[in-house]
Image (cartoon, rainbow, N blue to C red; front, top):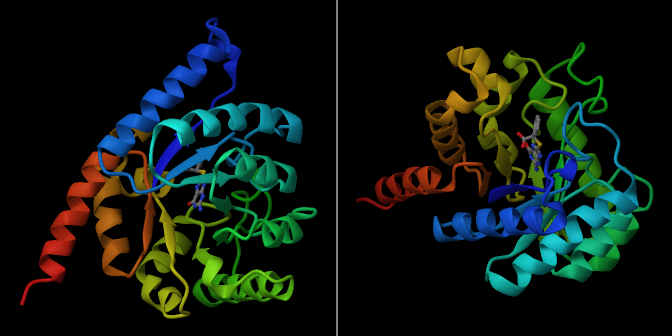
Length: 259
Ligand code: 7PM
């Protein structure tokens, strides 16, 4: 899964065409590099991001989704927590919902059920603004797993098919480095719950803490983490660096299928 951020246009004087053009080029590049899914996000769910209204988020992502859907042949996922954005994005051609809030937002469960598309339920402790202040768990792996299974129950209760559910431990979302490491190490136990697991670890600050490197120098760390996630049973890797991650995947697959 390649990450496609749709940034606000405040720094672009070329207006909407430039932004659309950039997004399209980035999307086409990731597809050429081997992305199987494109995750389009309007930045409202990013840790520390300022609140974006539903209409603004729709205006950001819908033109991009429409443009990509008409030009490339890979499924598009919408990274949002807002019910109205989910509906508008799927109407525009998205066929998967990626919700870092695990459908806890107003109307999100019902809208996701009515759209009948795969939904990734991610764990987050606290909200994007405050979650890194004092993350605390009694036991992080069982706490995160318990939360996700509760969200699965809530989703199934409104009619979301279990075949449409994916889980994500939410690396970096209300977690210390130790919490993130415990979750990555214990990935096989989450995978053992029987749902496909999505892992988003690409360039994240936990890699910066381990390696001492800034965000633009975390490729090797990201690839190491990607391989660990694959070995732990991850079904989808959400990444910035598609070509490099596809090489990791090929090496892992080659070894996995050897005699
Ligand atoms: C700043 C900090 C900007 C963190 C962006 C981020 C995930 C996600 C994100 C994830 C799923 C990033 C994050 N992370 N969706 N959206 N899983 N399912 O690094 O881990 O892209 S935003």
